[in-house]
Length: 305
Image (cartoon, rainbow, N blue to C red):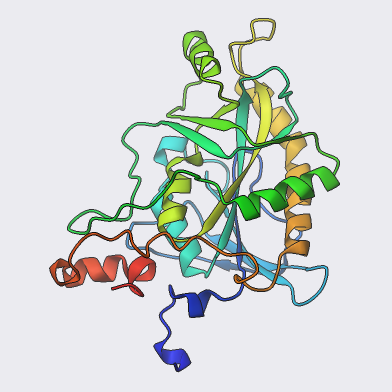
């Protein structure tokens, strides 16, 4: 097969690991990147939160890893969680060849052992968002991907190991409740989520993780505990100032963890696979898919159509 005939979404075109990082509250840049360039993209789903910062991070051995960074709230934190164009953000990462995506997110703790400043690496989500576009499909194309295990185990394991090496207090696993926001929880809601056994609460992991799965990008989340949610009656009610103060303290640790993960990433996706989630997910007869819709989803599913 000649290089010109390889579809950009095909396994042949995605044989090398390319790392994406989406930064949350407090993490608006990656100052360790080398040979930096700014890339502005348009997508069939609108504009991403900001321009992408692309560059290289060194590996312990072998060639540096390509990295694309995006602040999900925009530069200067101008976009609220429900206003984020998650589809455009993820599509942009796919355009840049990203195979593995690290999401950094500020969260509130729902359990006493998760102290502000700790790092949590959830492996499950509970969706409490409302009306956010959560799929690239529809409008004449029906697709249903598996999402029982929403976080990529291989990438998450590497994050856990790197965080421990960096000296962080780590919580390996847990459930992240994704609320709509932007207002924080009521005390009744917070106690409800605790009764479910949830670990942390935040506002941005969904539909981000769902869209990454549809885009066949391995997704793992590093949650930075900033406060005890309002269930903790011995604590003052959550304030933006208190949250941001802890997030800023955690941002340097988050950058350190990402650099350590990058250093140990393998060269190829054969060594660290990404999910082939679409291989049996598209239900629609290809002959019924319009040319316009084919073009809209080409980068995601064109190799299968």
